[in-house]
Length: 151
Image 1 (cartoon, rainbow, N blue to C red):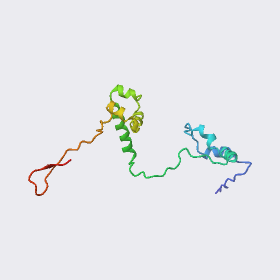
Image 2: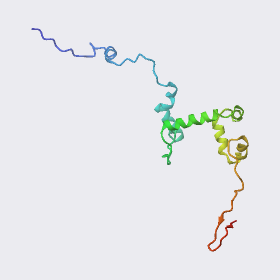
Image 3: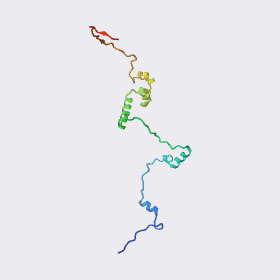
Image 4: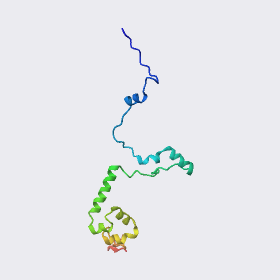
């Protein structure tokens, strides 16, 4: 009976590169990594900038605090945007051209109170009544037999 001795790796009988290629992970597909961010994310560049300015790079979106309970979910927000675009596209072509076919410009226009009279002329807002009309009521005073007009 022959007993095989275990293989012992030594620097003289073992190729580390060949063993690494045999057992390593080979990624053959093209990388999805965005290489144009490599300088921004290099720790050496970040520390070099910190040594010069004394400030760490800021995140593109700073944290926001507030009451966002009325916002809802993504689906309802997207539906609101689509409905706004559909309503904008239902306007006459000349009116859409006035706002360069951009619903955001229309919203900005309507948000400014100084544009109210022009928006009324364009038919975007209902004409507001400057004077409120008060109709007199018939009031019967106790003891009188005929109604009196109140003013």
